[in-house]
Image (cartoon, rainbow, N blue to C red; front, side, top):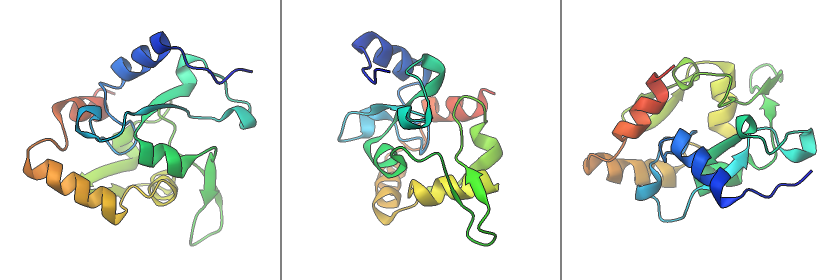
Length: 147
C-alpha cells in the first residue's frame, strides 16, 4: 500500500479543508510551514490513501498525532479513539474559548491531549493571529459549522 500523495490529491484535500488545519483550525496561509496531508487511520493500522482517509494538518498536529488512532482516557484508562475528521463533526467534540480548544467529549479530550492542541506554542501562535483577526479565520469557521 503506497503512502504517496500526488500533488493533485494534496490540492483536493487542501481545498476540501478550506486550506485550514482540520484539527486546530490554523489557516495554512498563516503558518510558517506548509501543511501536510495526513492519514486519519495510518497505513500501519490498515488505513488507505483514499480521499476519505486523508486530512489536511499543520505540522504540529500531524507530528503529535503520528500514526496514533486512540489513547487512554485519563480518569478511566478506557481506550478512546481520536476525532475522525470524516465521520465526526468538530463542533460536537470541541469548542473555541478564545484561542483555547476545549474538549466536549472523551474523543475530544484524548485528541486535544495527544495532539497537544493547547501547547503553549500553539496558544501563543493563535493569540497573535487572533489579535490580527486571523484566528479563527472565516474558512475555519465554515469548516466547523458546515455539518
